[in-house]
Amino acid sequence: MQFNLFTQVALREDIPKYGLKKGDIATIVEHYPMPEGEEDGYSLEGFDVETITVEVAESQIEPVKASVSLVN
Picture 1 (tube, rainbow, N blue to C red):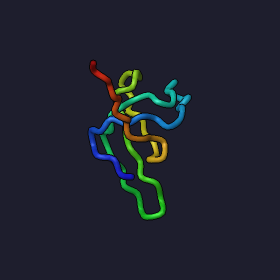
Picture 2 (picture 1 turned 60 degrees about the vertical axis):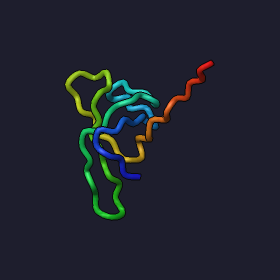
Picture 3 (picture 1 turned 135 degrees about the horizontal axis):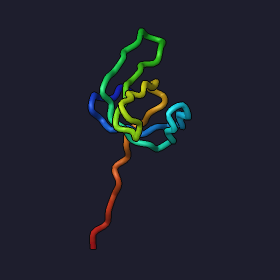
């Protein structure tokens, strides 16, 4: 699944190197298309990691699920 730039995504797994946990949310700021048979990559920003852009493989992220609120 290709993600659009500036889309918010959630991590599908922990990234211990940066202290990030599954479910943490960030914004896609760059897409790195790879040749067929290889996994695309993305740069993410917006985590609580100062001045660092985190690079991940497509399989490490998922769309942010919209929350539903009930109003009475």
